[in-house]
Each structure stands twice: as structure tokens, then as C-alpha cells.
Image (cartoon, rainbow, N blue to C red):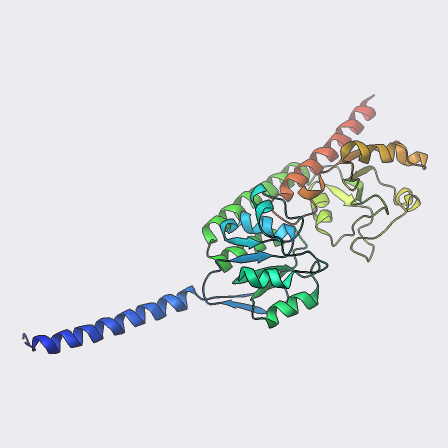
Length: 310
């Protein structure tokens, strides 16, 4: 049966129906676009929509945001943010000692990425009090990097790019593990700074890299994450190889400091430089540092085999 209505009445109903339909569509779109994700404090960070204006409060967070496909949404970064090249040109908002609240407010971010152990808790609290969503991260293991990539992908709506970065990273990690992880274990002293002499314990991400390459951190059991040690303590730990990149002067200075050590037994140990930014920052670029570590340890193994044959 066909029902006829007056033109005016039909038009009115049509407009009302269209308005209701459009409202329902917009409501569904807004619900679908809303994002809620727990950060590394266990707190839920809720966004009305994927973030479009992002501020990062540590250099590694800018780097990993770019890797997750959100680089074009960065509007402010921490001091010393220098990779990739494009982030050098972005406004800087302070560092781990103190953030520039006025500049952050002026940038109007809809998401702030913070580092739990690298940023001041009071700064994070102030930013949240001002109404900014702050996603606090604490990557400590190699497995945390894909997790953080996925989290940023979710918060920014760049999941496909983040997943692509995860796949590339995971494939390379598995490749290194299969190639080096089961080789002859070597005792390693890893230097992250030279004055005072600093190393890492077993909870540090660098220890994960050593294990990936078949290395054993000689200070893995100490309580402090980055302990100060003496040359005598290094000698007593009986490392078979020294790795690191703490010397500000680069590779030549790093090797020279060990070749001229006041302790004779340390002068003869093989020492290999690892570019600090490729291993001390928890980002996908750590696979470059891991590759260098694995290759260095393999050189020591090959050298030993040659000596044993002779």
C-alpha cells in the first residue's frame, strides 16, 4: 500500500529523520573515535579522539612516536631530541630536570608522552592538573619497545604504521637471537660513562641486548640500575670483553682509556665502542646497537678460536 502525505508534512518529517540519522551517525563516530589506554602507571588515559598535537618529554619518545607513524603530529619535544633530523626543528619544552609549562600550554597538545623514571613526578602532576592527558611510559626491556609502538599507534590512530614498525623490529630481533644467542657465552663489562665509571645491572635494557648476543653482564646481579664501579671491581668481575660508549670523545677515546688503564690486566682485554644513542635509547633503533654488540662479541669468539687452533 502506498500512503501519500502532504508535501510540507513529508518534507518536515524527512528533515527530522535526516537530522536524527545524522546525529546518530556522529554519535557513533565519536564513540568509535574515543581512545582509552592504560599507561605504565596503570592509569587509564582517555582521549576523545586520536591525538593530533603531541608533546614528548624525552628524546626517545619523540623518536618512537615518529617510528609509530605519528611524526607529523609532534608539536613539541624535549631538549636533546635529535633523531630523526626533523625533530631538531621542533619547539623544545624542557628536559627531565624541568619542563617549560608555559611553552607546553601555548602548544595546546591533546596528548603528552612522558617518561616515568626520566621526568619529574611533580611536572607530570602539574600537567595533568592543567587538564592535559599524559601517557606515562617506562620501557625497560626489549619486549617493551613493540608494546610502546602499539600504544602510540592506538593513541594517535596510526596503528598500521606502528604494526609495520613492530614487524620490522621483531623480525630483526629474532634474526639476531637465532644467529648469535646460542653461541659461546662471554662475560661482558658494559660502560655507559667513564667519569665516574658507570655500568648497568641485569634490569637494564642493555643487559637484554647482551643476552640476545650471547653475552653475560658481569654486574647483572647488583641492585642499582646504573651503579658506579671501580677499575678494581671490573677486574674482580673477570670480564672477557669490554663494550660501551661512555667516552664523550667517541670510539678512539673509548678504546684509549682502556689501553692506558692503570690496571695492567684490563689493558689487554678486547674493547669495542657501541654508539650510545643506538643502544641507550629504548626505540626501534636499538637493533642497530644490538647488531654492533653481536658483531663485537663474535669477533672475540673468532679470535679465541684462532688462538686455540694455534
